[in-house]
Image (cartoon, rainbow, N blue to C red):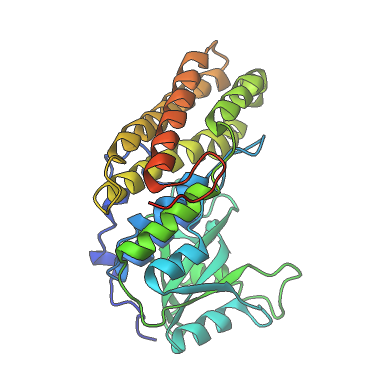
Length: 328
């Protein structure tokens, strides 16, 4: 089967949002692959990062940031919806590709060569990919995952689609259809709509302040839990917070040049949150090795920067403190 998007793993260049000079080179599997899918379609993914304005802390972890289906449709005309999985996932993915649709598919990272050094043939982890080319005869799959575009084959092809199983597993993977429709570029109207919608549903209060309290409360636990537990803990708190803040900075800088002058001030503070979260992560890693640390000052600075940034964003896009859109 030919590629739906005409790209090649050996010549693929990721979006600049995934360059090595970033504070957080990756956010999570879903957000990162959508950045690359949109990039490969010739679309700018940055306007969709306005979803970071609505990220929050739920008491135990930071939002697992995802580009929102309604934003993707408003900005690019692409429809994303869950599909009913009633046959082997590979058949559904092939059927979708045959009619010009992509799919997001939950798979086991154990079978993904791009995770070499973490989960590849070492550990079982849930992650999401977007297949772009399937060759059953050759046993090859080309796919988007995290910040890149890759190929797997042979044993990994059989394993990622669980081909040795004769029936559906009792727990089927989550699969979405991506209907490309007549894809269109963004315009000032839909950019403003998406920005205001996400700011209007932002967290009440200061979620970074709440996260800071949780980090301090968990300090003793982290010191005794070991490094494996620390990595899982940190991914859900500090990495998601820091990466969301960095993407909020990117969205702010984009909006500053798209009719919302002044947003660049928010970007600077969001980047302080991003770098602060990385610094606290390093401190907590030392704690996990049994050392004494005190990240309270850094966490307080992060909370002040987040509030200052969100105040600028809300005022500039025209959303008041009661989450009401203002006429601007």
